[in-house]
Image 1 (tube, rainbow, N blue to C red):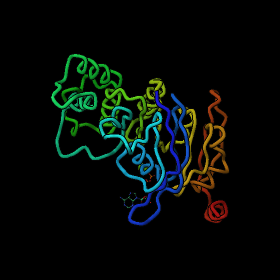
Image 2: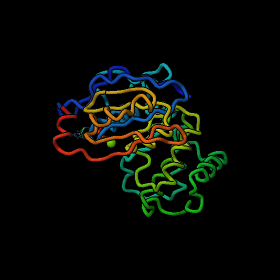
Image 3: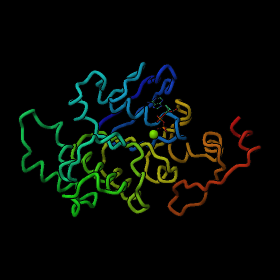
Image 4: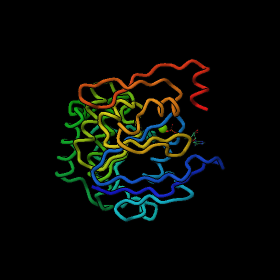
Length: 264
Ligand code: ADP
Ligand code: MG
């Protein structure tokens, strides 16, 4: 399990500021949900953390090492990613793709061994994709692809898992299943999530961003207040009683006059 520290992270694209002085920590083993409206900078922040988009200021420190000072392979041993990055033009079978999760553990001339194949089998089983192991990845549905990408990340056996909207395309059962699994792994995890109710149910902590800045960081109960959701998302929000004691929210549209009043 890793300890993550993000210090003063700022980023811009073509001169436009996208992230402005982002600071937060993830203690070992915590599962943090990153929430915020479309375009608030969630993916950019995650990409800076998993080392594909270089921030212009600030640091991302994993277990006392600045990720932007590590070699790509060393960084891959520390962080596994489930994201919507392009998968390239090549088609692979499901099992081949999951096996790629083992790459950072290998030297240039090492071939895949029995342990690698056993790990692949286990990871496919965990995401209920064993039957589809010989299928072409490109032929899968969005939800099946998402589960295969999780299996590849699990096969990597990193101590920090980053996920960008991992529940996209998944039906409700698979959404719950995926987040329960991430929680059950016991690794440190950071996931951008759209669904505030899922975030409240599964995350230890929620970091909410808006327009490139953190607006709240705390437990689901602390962060997901009706007022804050109204201000940040421009929608009406009403906390509803939940027998499990998890904060759950019903949403409703605000009329235009009220929206401008709340957003102002
Ligand atoms: P989120 O994941 O929260 O929806 P993003 O991090 O994808 O937000 O985007 C944050 C902002 O950065 C948006 O305004 C988006 O338009 C802008 N942005 C992201 N990628 C690019 C890019 N490659 N070129 C220009 N603007 C970009
Ligand atoms: Mg995004």
